[in-house]
Amino acid sequence: MYHKKMKPFPKDFLWGASTSAYQVEGANLEDGKGPSCQDVKKVPEGTSELNVCADQYHRYKEDIKLMAEMGFKVYRFSISWSRILPEGTGAVNPLGIQYYNNVIDECLKYGIEPLVTMFHFDMPAALDKRGSWGNRESVDWFVNFAKVMFENFGDRVKYWLTINEQNMLTLVGPVIGTLMLPENCENPLKEIYQQNHHMLLAQAKAMVLCHEMLPGAKIGPAPNISLVYPASCKPEDTTAAQNFNAIRNWLYLDMAVFGRYNNLVWSYLEENDACPEILPGDEEIMKSAHPDFIGFNYYNTVTVEASKSTEGSAASLEDQQKASEIAGVYKGFRNPNLLTTEFGWEIDPQGFRNTIREMYSRYHLPMIVTENGLGAYDTLTEDGKVHDPYRIEYLRQHISVMQEAITDGCEMMGYCPWSAIDLVSTHEGIRKRYGFIYVDRDEFDLKTLDRYRKDSFYWYKKVIATNGEDLTD
Ligand code: BGP
Image (cartoon, rainbow, N blue to C red; front, side, top):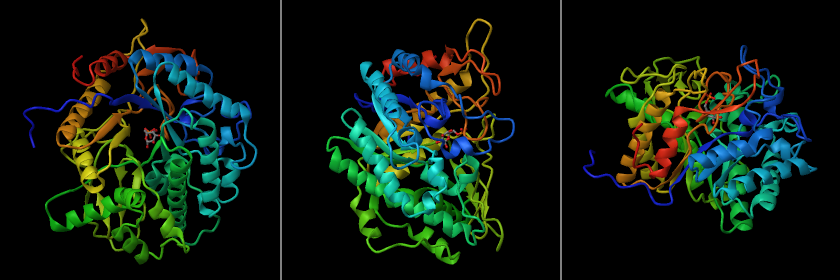
């Protein structure tokens, strides 16, 4: 649908950007913080450790000041579970509480709304030893962590996100360094979906608790949603696209919003003897939770064709944004209509609109974009500039189609691209940069860690100042 006249962005639209604790903070074992799974994993060869990152732990004041200069209305960051509870349960680390109090207060000083992700890929290592999400007690561990956060920060934090990209934790855990399988696990698929079930329960209980403890606050999930296209108009390709849409996307939102398992996913799990164990009362817990909005990360769409294989290949994705194959279910297909980033991710702004429209027609809840952005190699010039027209172009196109989606009638609350500042990628190091703010460091040479405003910084500042009306350079 072509719109002759676009609707403006809502007046109170939340413009901002995102980070996550383990990728931006550094100070990974300082001031009482316990290790998380990210601190004990073996990082991919050629990429940085996660002990310093962008050093935001020591530089949050400078960073938030720069965000305020860009005009941010919101800053999405995550709270590190093991900074608050070093063992995952038990004693609270007062310095951890102090740190996030400082970050929240610093945001509020500039009128920036904190949007807190409760869990972003960083299970406390102590809980990994106790079976991680595979242990049903993980539901209680998470709810306890949620309670500590609500008690300490709930007087000031009005927007909460439960689990970042639970679908990626389930589908590509090893790539992002989170999957914990018991030794000699006989049916890994069943184990993974059992973990997934516990996360779903934990999320539901946390949403209910949030509404009980903080009546004025809003809470929602934050999956990574990529609409799946069929590779052709062959009917079996559409069936494959429906299969993967269900496995990759709708399972998570159907559960968060309606409290029920998606039937296509359930049938796939049944076929593979991988249905999770569901205890009496679980269904009631799932149904009792009602998100106020949907947060979602969007990088691109995915295209698939029918899979002709009958056995083998159970890896659903190569990484977050590249589909591989599940025999008989779907097979990834390189979309010839799309360009890719330097890191091989397809770029599909129109797909952003398609994804938003599809989500809104399924769930009818307000939405906030919690990630979207371009990972690229950036260069700091001798005079301290970073020229990143490619990032501006990517963001411009996505913001522009978001306005079309708003004009389509979809309710959008805000936009938080990835990332506010350069930080370490999930598996491709700090050289894959996303930020508006450049951090002066290399993969292994920490250099000065000084901050520089990229060209996209000035551009985004103008976008925010005009509430999305002026997207020109
Ligand atoms: C999402 C994660 C982020 C982030 C982003 C970019 O999947 O929620 O943590 O890093 O993707 O991905 P990458 O770092 O792999 O480039």
